[in-house]
Length: 290
Image 1 (cartoon, rainbow, N blue to C red):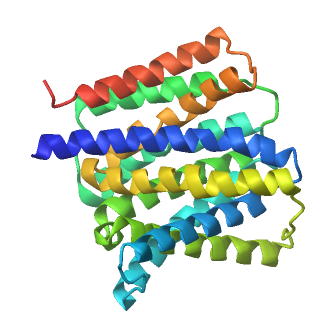
Image 2: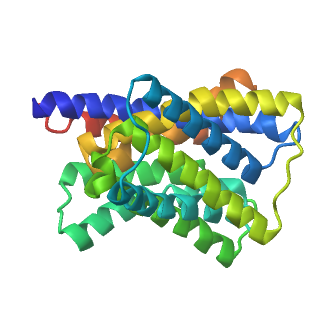
């Protein structure tokens, strides 16, 4: 039974990484039609939350939270919103390629934090997977001369924020709340928190045209909803370390989509990086199955 649950969890996590990898593809189109990162985040979480809430109520369930459930989801939302904000802020100081590379250090942060906080040991197989992930993600980065310490710290901190989010999800009480209900309220809280940050920082603006709005609605209602739901289901099934390592499929799917649909060039460097990440994923999936 435990093996079947683990396999199902890994499938959910790989699907989640694939769906998350679709988002940059849609975001590029939305940005070209007047969208910006902050307004897209608010719209994405608001619509996803509405979809989750509608599904849960159509199932005949009450969407309302108890006090303890609200506190658990609010705690879960804090590292997630910090991650989003720090990552997007880092883009103002360093290239998106370097920022993404540093952000994807979160598998190492998950493993280190679990070791320090929960005294959970890491197997040699997971260390090998982590090494392959690090090489693969590192190979993706192409130096452009734009190095800024503050930007690098923000990008690294965004990875730590996401690592904390994964740990809270897998070890905290929020993971025990029904997935659809929890995802609905998590999305609403993230939308509110990011909107507040936008208002305080004076970045609140909405200049999307009809194309951008349509693409945003589709991305939020379908892609983001599926990405969030599959991750929330899969992570508690597999644990924080496996969830973090398998999530590195996200940049692979994003790059492949760009090559197929946007005509982006795949260099030998990118191909090698993809191979390392895929090797890490295959090794991780085969662990404890033989």
